[in-house]
Image 1: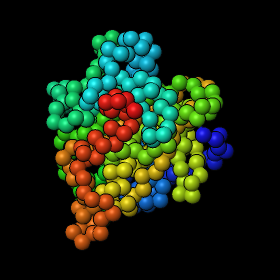
Image 2: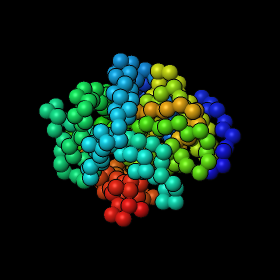
Image 3: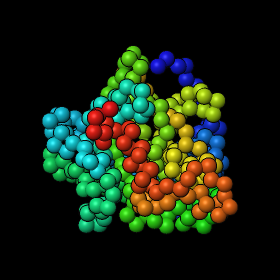
Length: 323
C-alpha cells in the first residue's frame, strides 16, 4: 500500500443533504431528487437534520469505548457467534482475499423486537450477545439502533421517490429486518508500514450503510477516476453510502463505491455503523424497480443468500479453515 496524497473532499463530490423535508413531509420530492443524483454519481452522502438526538449518539459512543477498554478476556465472554453477533477481535475480518486482516475490533448486534427477542430464521441473525459486565449496554445500543433504523427508512423512501416509485417500494419486507449494527474501534495506526488498513478497500455488502464518525477521521472514498479522497467528519451529519444490494436492486443505477479506513492520526478512532437490510427472504430483483422487460445485469438473489456468500469471504470465523 503506497501512502497516497489525498485530495480533501469537495462538497460537489460528496454532497451534504438536509433530509429534514423528507422526514417531516414538507418537501420530500426535492430531497429525493438530491439523494437520487448523489447515489448515481458517487454513492456517498452526508446527511444533516437526521433527527437523532446528540445525547443518543454520545451515549452510544460512551458505551462503545467503555466496552473496548475491557480486557480481551472479558470481551471474549461475548465472542462473535455463528449468527454474527458479539465481539470480533483484531484479525477477524479482511475485505479482500489477498489483503492483510483489518486493524479493528468490533462489537456487533442486530434487530430485537419489543420483548428483546430476535428471530432465528437465518444463519446471519440470532440472539444478541450482551456483556454481563456492562448491564446498560443493551438499552443504549438498541436505542441507537432503532433511531438509526428510522433514518434508513426515510432514506429508502427517498430513494424510491427519486426513482419515481411508490415510497414503500424498498420497505415492503421490513417487519423483522436483517439489519445489524456495530461499534468499530480502530487503534492508532502510526504509518502504513506493512500495507495494512483499518479497513481495506471494499464495497459494502448490503443495501445501505449509515455511519456516525467521530472527530478523528480516516475514511477515504474512491472517485470514478480512481483517486482516493478523504471524507472527513462534518459535525451534525451522518455518512450514508449505497451498498452492493441496493446497486444490484437498481440494476447498477446507484453506485456502490469502494472505500477504506486508514487511521494515521495517532489517536484512537471509533465509528458507529448501521448496515440496513430488509428481511432475509427479500428478493433483490431489478425487475421490481424497472419492470418485467428490464435487461438485468445480475440475476435475482435473496438478501439472505447474498449476505451469507459475502460474509463467508470476509470473516475468518465463518470459514472452516480460517483462511
